[in-house]
Length: 614
Image (cartoon, rainbow, N blue to C red):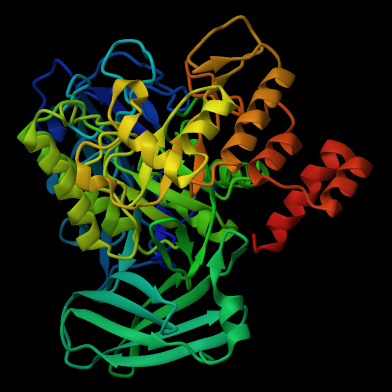
């Protein structure tokens, strides 16, 4: 299916087969089925769409505990097995997955947002059919698992949405040589003008293995290095060519304004034979914070972000490659330079388009909603897998393990809950020391790199009074209680740190009499535009903040506070929203707008997107 592209863009091979499409399907809630032979498949489902969605062809949003899938395929005989290995990949299956191939169990995985795979070579024969069966157990009432915005009630309520059960990201086959590259992690260092990589080798060892790594950008070769493989892991630092030329450095730096990627080719050699080739990419980019700023590539940078929940009408949390790319384009067209992916670990193809088009991302762990030892273990495991999957993406500039004390509702009273927040904060810093970590986005901080504040007042003067200066921010941190919550729980948390408004606005507007969720309400596009422009002007005047994240990009089910409707149609003038987000208008832009109007503006910014390397 062409609408789903290679699903792992930072570790791509030529030989793969997409298994999205029609699969046999059955609900197994009240059955005693334990093995594939027991199951009576009675319908079909369109993978990778959840059965709760219209796109799946099932569209059954009611409670279901167990789902069964089956697909019978015959791999392309031109690929051939020979000494090659055949690996079966799942982008994400919610929540507990068991996989059988030709009647043999080959994989088990727990975690609804992270990938897993299995070597199925031992149970397959070249040129013969392969039967794949998947059982997904996803208890709709289990509040101790990372579930994000998936509702536990029969109908979506308040700010929670329909469930996404079972397979919801791409399934694919991949042919590997007996000895192969298993993974790669990239870590740039712009101070030394180096790129460190860690490559892992899988399969049959050999004393003659060597790894060749080539880096290039815009047709220019930056590195061509060759390394001996002594162990299964290869960790090396690549010094880029022309490192002493300032102009070359500035041209290679990645940012939303200049999303320059460095293409990588990794070749694994066994003697004089190339046994495996993988395509990847990285970028020269650094992020950090001081007590007053967010720092991008060594310089203060104002974050102009939007909350993005990653749901689509008809398909819930699943999206085609075109839909993912379109959301990145729309976010940029609206004048934002980043998105906080809220309560969802997004498809890697979204991160790919953020890398290519230039959009900063805060990645956030979907919450559990009770605190138990099991919940703590599940959160830790899934978060570790998410960081491992995504830490090489240049677009990701912050990690968010908790939001608004969800799953740790008694932080002021229970030391164990505070310890879990501290534990995931420090674990994240250990796994990835290169990015800021927000301990508990919104309030009740015990540890964080950025004081991220949620404040939904619709009065601009209150925002300025609370955050207009650093002294005002300091006073607000000690005195303000958004949603009756303390912003910081412990005095040491109030050391000098950058502060950011990471949820605000939430202005609801619909074209019908439907009310829906919103923190304030307007009845016409001009009213929405006027209030938005006023709020953004106030936020830009708040010198005590390093940036903002507006709630939210699109309407999402009963939440009607998006700048776009669910179908991605703008609710009001894109030009006015973008100008408000940027906080300034150049003379060139004002003259162009006067001459060309709204459509000219949109064409201008689309041309800018295309110029940056789409």
